[in-house]
Image (tube, rainbow, N blue to C red; front, side, top):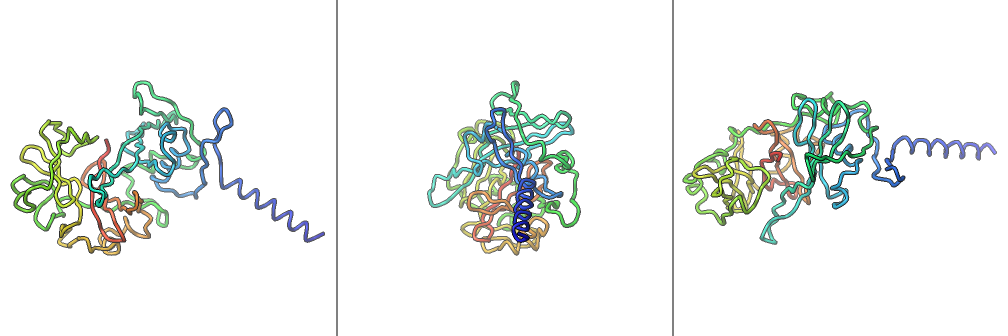
Length: 313
């Protein structure tokens, strides 16, 4: 009899613990939207934003699977946060060479005072108000946690300031800064392998922001450069066919491991906590000179693969 009472007590306590860890959201018809797994008291900006959006009934989730849709804070003002939903697609014309690229599939706005989450994807002038699990925000303030002026969280949490990779410290193939002339491009790389007009590629954001019809993408050894008149800038740089960079005099090439990068950017790589995965590639996000956006450093088989300057649309 005593043994039975102990077993019943254990089962009751187990069931109670489970209900505290997982909360589910239902719409007005009782249909479950998504389950949110509870986290501890400390959480990163990226985790909080992702959990918040994934608990919502955003339109993007109707057309793409939960595991396919990615979430990122795009910009922030004191009263409103703009959040981007996107997927990663391979736009390479060569089946043997992947070129993963972000494609925006949704835009949301979260308002600080009202707590309203609005979907502006289809019509910014007539946004749709979304439902989301308000329990996710208990004890957390997105506008404080995700503020660009926040340098670091308390020691021991899973959020730290990302290291900064300044353009002035980078030399492509040991010679060129990020911005250079067309003549310098040809001197170091020769003629491009292919050329595409930006108007045909229709990127959501460009480096030079001129919207000139003759602006081009120059492709060379897998890398992509943006060109406007006589000016050229690195957009994506692939560590293929001998391509490399020097950072503060230290060479980074296709043989550079993630452990080597951790020596340069310890906070971004430490414990792999700051890494995301896009497709089959791991990626470290480094702050750049830009107010918004960052540098993505991709890894394949734990070795550096390519880098990309990401800017919000």
